[in-house]
Length: 233
Image (cartoon, one colour):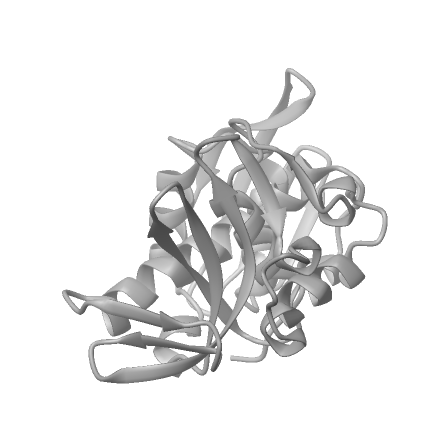
């Protein structure tokens, strides 16, 4: 399906707030990551060729670029565009540069290196990077001694990005809110928008209009965020 960036999601949010961006990104990103695991990775081993910009799972080869890396020693994140000592080619760093350009007012995407914490993890930074991209992409964490590189994976099968129906959406959404720290209303809005599902919203509710049924989610304020209180089919 056609890619929709979270930045055009028709709901009010703060583009300078990383938690807002992550909340909008997480639903669709996690769903696509899961489907990449199901349809592409499976039990296959992986290799990444940074020089030639490819990522391989088993016999399947995909285009790839480097978003950044996390260091276990210093506990920091380093964007590939800021990693001047690596000698990475411009095209290899392109995904991180595109994310930087898309989010000019978001400190996490303008600062080349910063400390990681429970909110700012390599996975969370990669999810937002994929969600603001102009094309359908996923990411993969490539561990190495002392840290890990996060790379984009392009050219994946259409099944990875297929829209979810109402039942699959509800199941995935509830799994995420049960274990992932985010704004539940923004999570629903971003997930539905990137899923290609029309929805209507108020400050306390979102109603998704799936072809087979409507799904209504109700929210309440909680510690500066919105928390899910009920889900009606």
